[in-house]
Image (cartoon, rainbow, N blue to C red; front, side, top):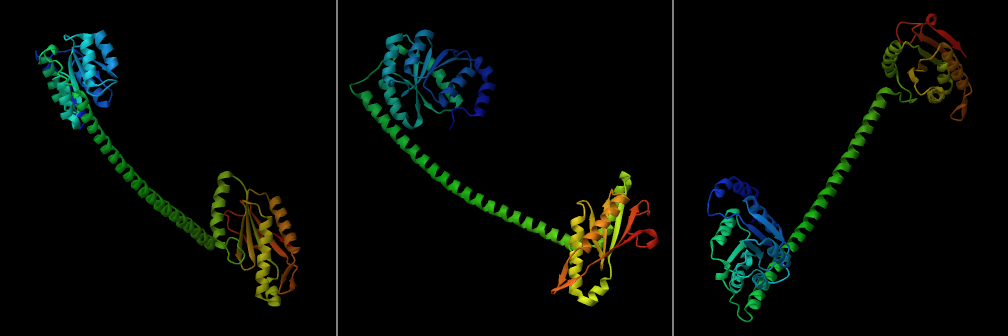
Length: 381
């Protein structure tokens, strides 16, 4: 239970005007001896209700404050500071005399019985048990001011009685510390268990994330393979006719927007049927693959090279002049003618090409390949 919950503090602040109207409430200078969050909250509570509150870390500092400030009330932890409760009482009385401030001891609830006995032995009649509700604390402070003056309560210490009470309180402190140590050990154990659980959960989550990333990567690769199958020719690895037709529409629109030329080159392998009939279809496939790779090695990165069908190929070149197209056609024809192609130990070739070039928009209103002789410039090699 906290000394001062947020809602308790609000209640005290809200009811402050009513308390201030009560004539019996004394607004006084109060010294609180002893550190700790509960003492600080007690100081704040008393300050909220109009008292002048001074805080002392230990008994020696409290005596200095009492000497300088002449407070009406001292609230001291019964075991706080650098001297025992009774020793503090004796030092306070020796310094301030019996007309000094009223003294109220503060004690933890678990040692209340022992603290009350020690307080009585020291001549202190009032004891506040911490923590307590704000309303109860204020009533106890009022009762302290309403009680008899300090000189009516004199110490009644018998030889060894203080030591007896202190030993009893020390035993309670030992028990309290032991209980706190057991609680701390339990908390450490639970924290370790929780950490282990979190580590297991983290490892499982990491494995799940890794598994999903691999699955996503495999799916991406599978989609890419499917896309490649859809747009590429299985024999040569070049783009297929469907991709060519799709690309021509896109490149045509781009050429129109940028007002640039677009070249389309149609390439046929000469006498390919004779090659198949003479050397067999396996040799024909070897020729198609070799020609495709040679043309691909001479194409620009932005060019679109496709197998149009059978032994026909198409090369689309954006932003290329007729001169550039003609130069590229000659390089392709010469490169293919110089190929040394073998199939089943036999040399196939030399292979020659027939190439037709069409320019957009000079040779047509759209980007579709022009195959009519009257619509293209033919280059036979």
